[in-house]
Image 1 (cartoon, rainbow, N blue to C red):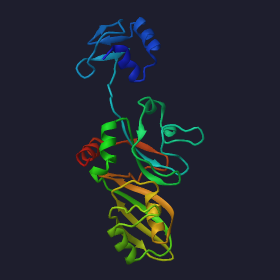
Image 2: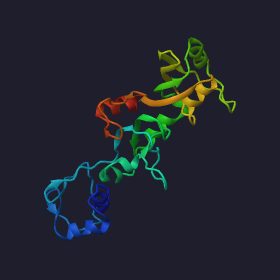
Image 3: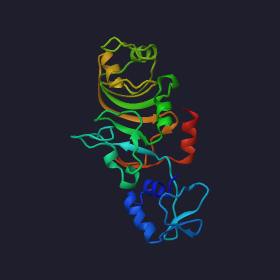
Image 4: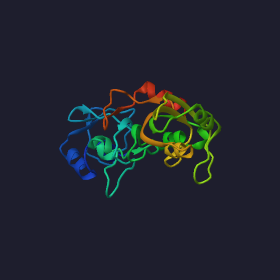
Length: 237
């Protein structure tokens, strides 16, 4: 990798700004001052430093966000704030994107990364990655609904969902449930309940595969996925 590309990718400025650092003799490779921006370096094998501080090479970032309502799951939008807008400039520098979508008014777990292969594996219908949601429902959820969801329900467009695992937490005029599905159709959870004559009034994603929402994250907060969480996630892909 070219030295100037490495430093620019790690957030040390534009290619032009990196060249200024090189002119200032601020950059060393294995302890030797370097001025050649085109020099090829191996960031994993060589010690690259700026003003004596080592440059830690990062290729991929993996962030867990507790998505707040009112923010859309997109990288950019002309009208609404996006989940990427909530990230600090350093994280944004890696050009990450949300893995899958949560509706604008839906809260909860959202994985944000620039690892396209992992995202593909987690979203591929062939992988059957489970996603669990907590929801409040306008209407009394019953055992009949559990059976209907387990068999797969027909949506308004004729599509029959794959089986979903529905757990009733509170069965009253306003019910509370947890639902695990292995698909990600547009507004799927809401449409599944509409198919049985009920309405979702609040929706929050709790988990995706082995990745479970960190309860200490307030709405809009995020943190790096731990190595242990990442290993499990990759193993479950």
